[in-house]
Image (cartoon, rainbow, N blue to C red; front, side, top):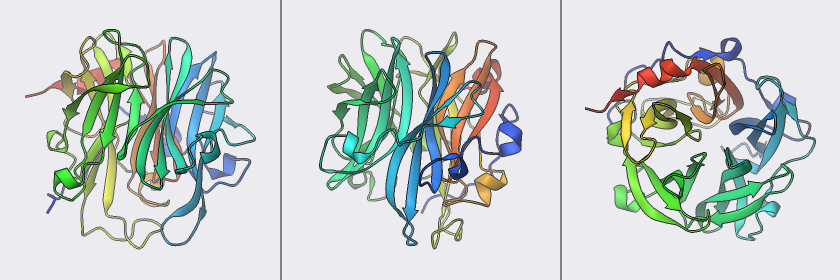
Length: 334
């Protein structure tokens, strides 16, 4: 049985936007929407761009019948203008086996906008990578074999290769239960990926007992690649916590620093959460409460870091911190 974890708190270096109020929710969407969350955010061509997950048509049985990816733009990274139509639906993937598309992550590499996303298919969960230059259409470059998702790309080649973080779902080989870790793979062309290796595991994170995985794409700093990740702990004594009959998991955001030249080397990691569920939007209201899922991180010229995260699988929120404070949290591994 998983070891129960104590109450968790966010780091004091984090400041939530407007006390935890969402920056995007269903009320901002000009088409059918129930839950707006797990967004990827970048700066691209002079503006902020957000690709967000929209679950809608709740079936009353703990799931949504439909899901797509929407797009929004902003001048300040806070106030968003949502496009009139969805950005990506299952029809845009070009694979008849796909039944759902969700969880976008955005990365700019050599002035091109790349999109990582997840798809459900009739035969397993897959991670995808696409590219868009007009923010209207996406060309799919690759899809993984099942079961893999939560992929994020580094914003530049390292040693002549593209690098991604990912989270496979090895239930069979990890004892038949959730025990998912963070891996990394390399590619010369964004299509064929290999040289796969484990980056870090659940047991390496004191505030996780269930699974861990990538968060937002890493940000380059002089100290290393500043990297967000998500963690999950489970407590079987937890009750309903949302719309479902029961929801016993808690998601937090963690932070670590990876070596600039060899990102498979962890320079340091915070042994405590960067962001833990605390506000009403994170703990009391929503589809699945007690969930923080970081999907976007932007380093501004003045040293401010904007962190975008889904709260309770229902709304998109933002927090800020100083980059030096975040780096200081990443203590060397023992």
